[in-house]
Image 1 (cartoon, one colour):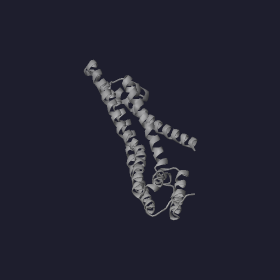
Image 2 (cartoon, rainbow, N blue to C red; image 1 turned 135 degrees about the vertical axis):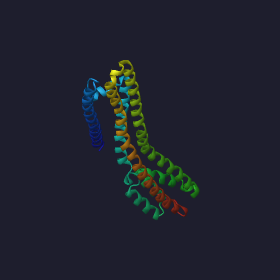
Image 3 (tube, rainbow, N blue to C red; image 1 turned 60 degrees about the horizontal axis):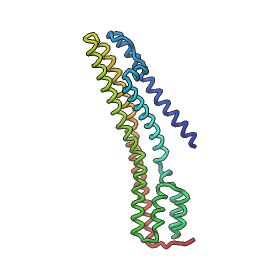
Image 4 (cartoon, one colour; image 1 turned 60 degrees about the vertical axis):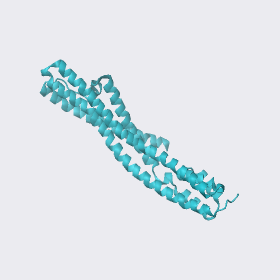
Length: 254
């Protein structure tokens, strides 16, 4: 299963970056014509665009590439983890419900330990404190539920981080490229207008690629955030229904 997921990640990452590469090469070809017409001299392929910004520009391109990889990895991870059967498996819910109907708390706790997952962790914290009274159970369940919610939302929130970081890196690359372009114009004089247009076009690539990463990252962030919120509410409702039974249940030693 892990090997299958690995090759899925690698194929998606490769497809994503190859499409971005082809986009840059096509844009570079257009700049060649414009540069020739404007007297700027010379076209700009993708490698030229990356290396044209100097050492800082290369670092920014590498950072944007890493955010694209992180974006794809986080989306795949969210598809695999933000699922009802991962957070609240139906088999576990059925077993725990049957055990609680029999008043066998220890059996329900055993089922939770055999099938670890967020809802199992929450229920286990309540079942483990059954001898302390219902108030202690409620407090333990509330703390555990808050921790599980934070763990789940933390992974989803990384998509928001990528979605905000990628365009900022792209904008920084564009600003750095435009500073270099105007500096070159100052040295070239009035005859360097074509070269200036070419340089500014190259500088705008980083912003374009930053947005290319940010748009799907933010779209999937809101999608998974809403999905996770719905699952969490369902899980909390189920947990409260189960612990209500503990008001009158007795521990069965077995």
